Length: 343
Image (cartoon, rainbow, N blue to C red):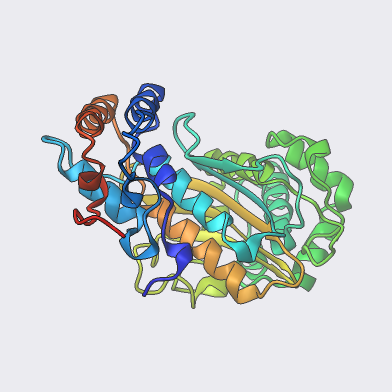
């Protein structure tokens, strides 16, 4: 039987598939009607047992599929709910998460959680170091030498700490790094960087700063150099053993981060509907298994890979369908709960 954490409470399913305020008022009207004194409110309508619950992605797809002319989609509000479910896992009760997910083109934010909270980024610090180095060198030399390309790969793809710290020193130290990052649109007060590698726990970076950096480098004239220096999911570097045989195999370029009680992944992934998406996922939780943290990050990335655009017409059709269900008190149809009474 699936674990408790794989199921979603009824109220959250309602919130995911019908975020419109008017729909909640309908639920309130229907569920708030007083029952006769001799009647017993069916438990299945309000607090379904574990065996009657179903996973959120399945329930949403089935409901949307019943709306004529609307194909099953994993909309952005469903993405938010699904990620929230991961973060609310009891194992992460003491965890500090910082997450931002944004398409490269367009202003839409697909998901954010503590976007401006500065957390220990581990080797995601190398993104700042290498981006600053690229910006500095590109301004001095129109054609960058091959050894510099190889050095960036060593720092980002294979997360070479000594090479990263040496790179910071050779381009002029932290002051010079800050100058170059300002030219890329980063605010020096938004982060704390004390080394080039991210080994120091004194480093602090919020995910919003990393997103700003990733978007700036995507537009940079040497952005391909930065992009190609990152590990590729399931293919090479520190991501060679992750996302294999998934929809992100070969379609995610990202920088990993690993310290005791710290995991991070920031970079770019391909989405069939939104195109390239920039994302940054940081988590700090002393005492937690690194494997547990890494698995949660990978789940978030995989959810992001499947999110779809959902038009207002689709949302309106779905809302109309759900209004009819609630009007008829046919909530069992929504979740396919058993029709027989529960003792």
